[in-house]
Length: 265
Image (cartoon, rainbow, N blue to C red; front, side):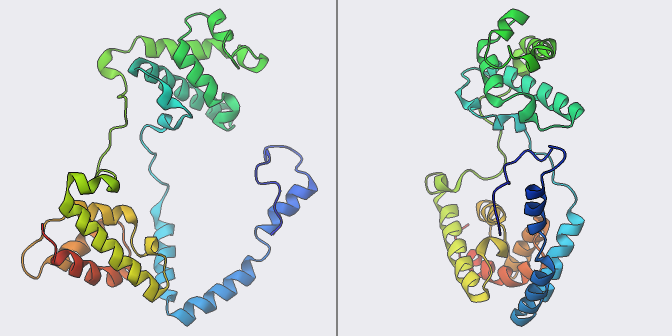
């Protein structure tokens, strides 16, 4: 399909004809694609699998907001103190609030680089703020007090309310550290991945679609072998709680039961 306008500012009005044509190409062949995909799913015996996936998406609702989204600021890791991180967090929230009121992308309100610069320099007056890159521009000057108030709110935070230097994580550590932290869990994960990769080739489904990698990691990290005859029941419970659909559990529970049922717990 023709490309060329993916990075354009689609808030522009009126939209140029070439942009409208570009947008139309995204949907032009969807009816024909539906017909072909329906036939292919039927041929592979995966129509019910697809139906379960569609129902899962329909009922899923909006995703939960990710915690500490402000930590995704570009170069936020270059800030050296927790107070600077608090300044960046406060400016990020002030930007979010302003972007929501104006109904525009936050990056169009204030770039990440400006937030990082202000958090590092910690200006306390309008003059000091406007001396920083971006903040002295005509569009930013009228919001100077808004940004200064955000900075001041972070300056007065008590130490026990400052953000941590690194995000607080839940769940297992990165898999590349398992061999050192818990060798037995690392062996379980390696065996599970190998078995799922083989199954992926047999059923022509990407391995990450058989069961999400995060769910596999949690299962292998937390695994404790249950009593006789309860291995598959335990695995099915974990996968079900983690959102795995029936078709996924039907394929993977027996396989993972063989892997984990023979592992050392």
